Length: 302
Image 1 (cartoon, rainbow, N blue to C red):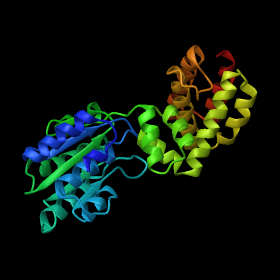
Image 2 (image 1 turned 90 degrees about the vertical axis):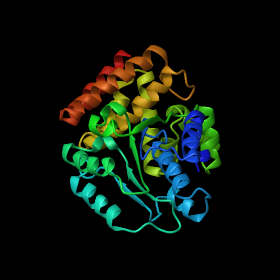
Image 3 (image 1 turned 60 degrees about the horizontal axis):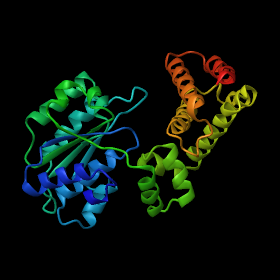
Image 4 (image 1 turned 90 degrees about the horizontal axis):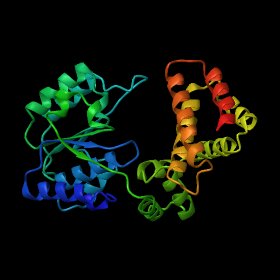
């Protein structure tokens, strides 16, 4: 299934060789920016490990539906992985028998940077004394954000985004309108997961269109239009943060001279800085209305 991962030829070659030679580490950390496909790469690796011959079970792994796979991910407002879930996974692995259809078991830890001290310690007990046939596949946005005690027990691999052109072809093959795929692939710089998520979610697509509207207002230094648009987000910090994050992505596309970005060059650079500052202030619990008002006013200076 690794061949289904777009781009990343060196990664696929290295993992494929390790699988076929029986030298795959029992704990693998896949590192990649959000939306670049680290989670999909993890499932591809798991499918090839559990079901080398492919088939329906392997397809189920890609969909996150196979019974030989357990998954841990962040929960609640903190987004951390609770120690209770780690202990439950440990018990499930140790007490359950291996299926005759699979080569082993897989435990996914999506967002390993969200393991806190307690959950990391509980995870160490499993990784250091792994049950027979268990493969641990972790993902993280950055290796540096994973606790050293966990990181040091894994072999790390980088998952990179693909080129916008390759992203467009891949997403179009998944049923996304080609024009839409080209637009989002440029705006999100080849991050396939992000492009597919936006293309398949009307609300998310509408948010990106609002970000483009905001970028057009920024390009025209039209702080009034920007303020009117942003007024709808003054009472919803999460929505305001999401909009500014997409606005930043649009502005960053302008730094790459994407024809789809309304802001280009120096304007794009300043827009990225303004978005970063606003996002930081929102993260610091500053009143969203104040943050957005200041942001809109400063667009006149681009």
